[in-house]
Image 1 (cartoon, rainbow, N blue to C red):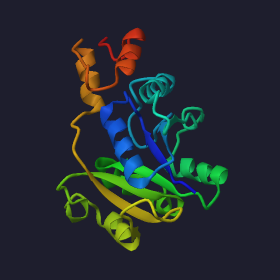
Image 2: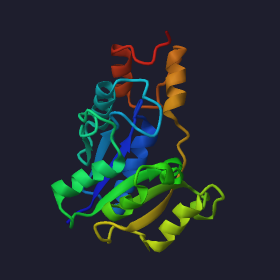
Image 3: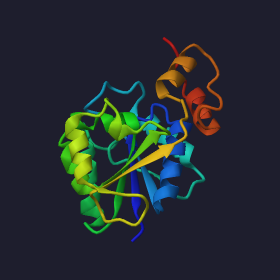
Image 4: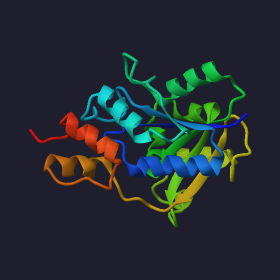
Length: 215
């Protein structure tokens, strides 16, 4: 059965860096669809600047017209903080153990993985695809913690879509798009132009609802 991608984050706001990562991974892994899952109450970082309902709507605006991309409200609808391991467990219960799942991560999130709740179980629930900068060589970086390096080295390396339901790791070199949600929020707070950093539909939504304006 075709694999499915799982892409979580605060998406505060969603921007072209997120969209390009998902698109490249979808092509590289032959993903049938990519689930964009905005965090409702992320437990491992500060509270997002923007309400979860707005962040979900911005994702819906951003991915409109791409048939492979789906906005998933599962974490937004939970009344308690959501861990990625809980989301993947729920997806496994819904889709079955045979469904190939790929958790899509940026390099920074990957390096921070040992701080996540029950992080080793992630490898049992899904394959993991990491977007690394061209020439970065994450596995040889001093930034990678030994528990994570040891865990990855035990896993089946992947170089394409032909793999099982879980347990493989793919490091995918991607051209860097130096766009950050923090930078976008700062630009908007000082009433600057964020055009060409995120889709026009998302920017229109931000202006309509007066998000990220300085107070």
